[in-house]
Picture: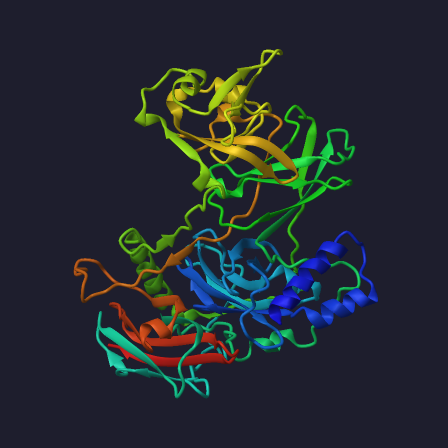
Length: 570
């Protein structure tokens, strides 16, 4: 059923996207046949010091069932200060409605009240339809803290952590009190098999006041009285990946009509694309894979056309002008505690290279025709001084043709005959389409790592090319020699890189000489009890005091799970 709705939805948006308004029938279809989304974000804390990390897990859920959504493939998280300015904007690649990331609180970020907002583009078809959580940031390194209220004896500041548990789940800990660097073992007890997706944070309890953290069992209260409206402008969900919208015009602001636009991302083999531009100069580009670089190069198919502009349209975002902020209240008696924590954070950051998180990079999938490429690694052959001679001596089935106007074209032979193609091949250098083949001919052949040949017709969007030549330079960085005025460079937001967060193992690692002043004992945004056997282990640090375990998530049936438990280290 879901697949049928998804197919109908794709057909629908293809037919109606060019309309300025939706008919009553269209609105009924969107209201009744396409499920709505809500977002919940699990934060490690709602109070953070400079030098600490804001850690979060993003859950995109179906409003109707509370199950994870597979509609949107991109999620957005922004941090806003009390002046309504963005501190950061994160784009997340969603895998079955989930993703996670972090933000290091820098020393130049002022103390004060902030808000985390999180949403999918599809959710913005309704007003104020986003997750929001108040957080406080405390910067002890600034002389003036105008974003705080200091009081000697504030009332009702301290929060009592009450153990919480979902009805069908209980968190069992091997004991209630631990020593320094001791192993803690958690077990999730339930009468049924645990099938779901969860995140867990274990953190020292701060005595300072902080905003109440929203959990997975009450987050739906944020979405009361939300009215989805498709009667005017339809904001499309990012169902295939990140959607980039733009417009091209002549330098005199005249609209360019019926042109094809080539989009390339330097160093990204899997992102080469050609897209159609409508009669008004508008175009849509979908990025389906992860990007390592934040630059896109756009060029018209007619590479001689230089006097045009490309404008990428601003991403759609919620209205933040009506957000309310309340200044944090800090008791004057906590000066020593704040100083101690700041020193401990500095020590931890001094050992950040030893305790570094591991980034998980997605391997570039390569050109979709990669398996058909006949590849020549030039280091396997005698090197020649120029590209033309390299083609003559090494690159079988390819050659450089001298044109009557003094320019050059690169051609390849058809694999089905001994004949030669009569039209130039599509040439790609380090992931970027090169329309001016002379730039490759004049390039230093010693800087080329390999040349690949595709010996068949290549359908590239609305264009057909007779073969493909793929060049990889030794540095793989798309050298400046290939850049032309006809290539318009634009910056895009890349998705956040996922990580495996650091957690010491005092049983199998020799860490005696490394100080351990971790306030955040563990953060695991991908807790999976099916693989862990309902058991989860971590180690305490050299700090003493009360520590809070907070587990959040959702079962496969859409049941929210929120468990809070405390233990002591002494």
